[in-house]
Image 1: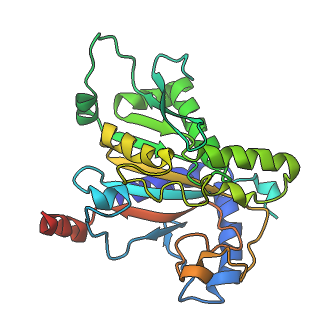
Image 2: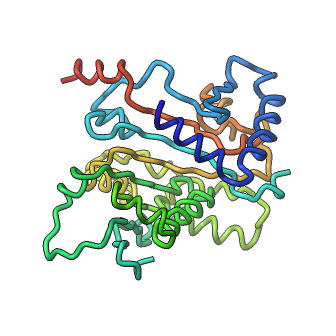
Length: 91
Length: 211
């Protein structure tokens, strides 16, 4: 959680990110979460949308991700999504 | 970036269609004649940024290289290299990147989704732990992992935000798998994280159980 707090703190400090996210999250809420709350999650961490493994990750030598495969070495394995185009092009 | 003394740029492999795949290690300059990779990653934590798995997601490479630029040129960022080894692997799917680049010359407003996958039409990481994958670039992430044994492994993606994915277009992941963690977004979600996997009490217990 400490890592996620640091990540969200820096993400929110980036110019324009908060406004972009608020607009995008609001739109996503209207066209997904409000339509189907079972399948479209809105899991926020400090105001940033982050899908976590709620039950944790089970270590497995055949797991595909780096942390679950080698939790004694890699303590965090994360993926991020960022818009490819600038804010004014996002419609 | 290879002109900076903090940067070690090297070819880390090749793609199925023969394109060079590059990586770059950032550390404070090393003056010694001999150097131990094992000690380097033991004495300091290591973070790997392995970008552009899905090659039409261009911002993945852009923002990781921007971070590399800051680490090399901004004294405040560069100072962080005293505390952490940073490894950049800016393009995982080099063949897809070339295809997306070629396609954008013709259709710059499209999502260029043909570049998302590898040259053989499967995800470039599908066989990343195989000992002899058909796609040679599939093994590069695991090769970097084995080399550095990183504490943190990051997989930054981008997504085309100007075009909404149609609900039943068969592109949306939810339609195919009922999985909402991946590409179910037919509208953008700003900056977000589809996956965050870290140590928990449960995972530590599982590790002990698996020994």
